[in-house]
Length: 236
Image (cartoon, rainbow, N blue to C red; front, side, top):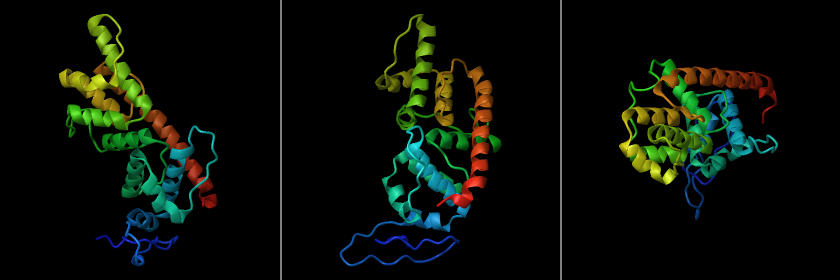
């Protein structure tokens, strides 16, 4: 059993700490405080990234104010988070990142470009193509704009093949993917991996699209790092 199992959160500290949380009180159900402890053991810049990621997931594009949750409520926020946010928080915590993510696409692109920087090719290499079941699962987990990019890509390929446009429904993707050529599967796997929100026509387009995406991604994260340097003194 984790030493973070308790009904009461561990005390918050601005310093790295190692401690045993209080035991469950009589009649209360034990719960895990693992993420709260990871948060408190992290460097302050990583904590900043975690807090801003939780806020960004909630308010980006909504016009709501950029208000952070209290630090001692980080475990509650994690427990209540959708799966894509949990993945982002775990990713930031695991790799001690100091820049926040706005959404699942941010996380996917950070992971993709980290792999590219480690020597992975844009496609192939250590990767294994997704099975039809895995593809449908990944498709359902990406943002809506990425799903639209996948559907538009398939529609474009089918129009080129048949000479007429026919809308592709998500329910038909499993069967379509099963019978697709490896070239089409590679492009769809790539779109999901990089969180692509644009349709792709040919395998040869990947290099150009990747370069444009990396330039935009780097610019956005450089701006966030500058903001962190300015705002860290005013963060909660």
